Length: 553
Image (cartoon, rainbow, N blue to C red; front, side, top):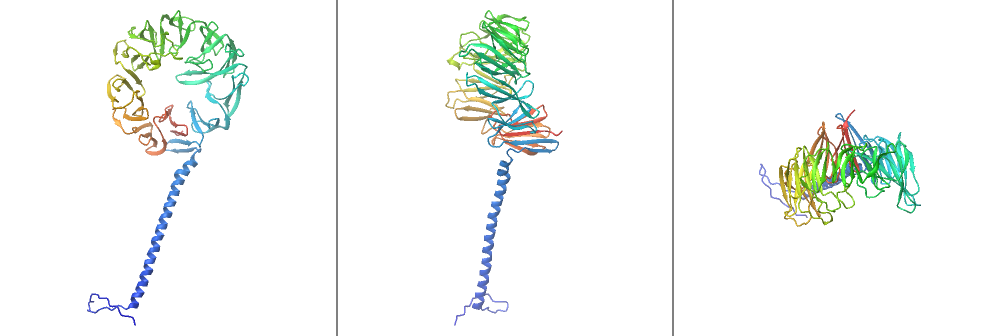
């Protein structure tokens, strides 16, 4: 017989003692076990539900942020709100894009053009076209060319195409025995467009030049003998592209090895080849001529605008630097001297001054026009060919010719960021000025173990100093050392702001305070943070990303 188990309890209000029956205990235990089992199963259910929830959320994030981003590649996204239309586009893997002359957006894969679009990304042409290159013509039409080698003589063959009415049409095939074709560009105010091709013909198995074959985009073709066209820019080889600053005149070398001027648009000589050297005067559309070892300036009628009395004439935007007897002076655009010959000039090659900087010959001075003043720096480039100068000097010159000597060190001018800096090699110290030469701050690198001068770059408020593998960051206004590139923001259109997160190297576009686009941006990658077209629309583009915003029409 089972023993009774008695549990002591507090007396009830009736002072009675409760006696527990063993069967009652067993029943209660069974009920408790059922209850505990329920809670265990419920907790397991909650854990399972939580795991499923995490998996679903992760899947949703992957789909909306990773998968969707990948899916968005190659897709044009267009929005229109708050009075603005904005478009974004990311290329598919392996493709790149380029904006040409603020007119065309070109999608290519390295060997072929895949699409040609306008700035609204409306497709103008979509069909794979193999190409070697493309450019805008001086007729403002888009051209493609494919260059092949002529296996018989090692020269080249040019197949030229043009975009016409949303189709690519063949324009011309340039091929001639022993003839090498190079493009002819017109370059004005950094606007570079192709005008045509010039083919230089050589004697068979000989480098002696025979003739020039000219093909212009307007369809004009002709051949000239006994002359060699030369570029307005430095040219290392007769097969280099030709650049001219006028859509008419090009300089040539005659068979007497002297220089003249040719009207390439009309196919006629303008100035006979009677000069030892001839260069363009971009300020006045005249020509700088060298005769009897002195330089002067002539016009197309051979009128002497400036007599032959200078050792050299260096053309700058709106002024000139002229030399005489190892001295420098400044001359204005009306050919009147601003200063006397008060500044020393030293030639590192002892060969006389060469206007075109190429082939081992360099200017040993630099000059700038800053507001209404001029800055002349003498004896620069002493790092070239182990040349050492007796002294370095810089001069700040007023428009009336008065000047102050600034320093005796290397000097650099950044007109975009309105900074001038000087480097002292002995103390490893940079001194920074504004464009009026007011002292801003100094940076001392004497505690750094390097021999070469650090490379400085300024972008969007941050000054970068690079040497070897090291990179340092400074506030470009104050010179204060900072950990990473500065943040930057700019109101680019009404209601439109662009903000740069310097630390994260990301840029954000806001429309009326709402973030509408973001892109990775490295302020040292050479791309602009944004590009404004006609003050009406904003573009950002790199190799793989395109964004445009403008007011709705």
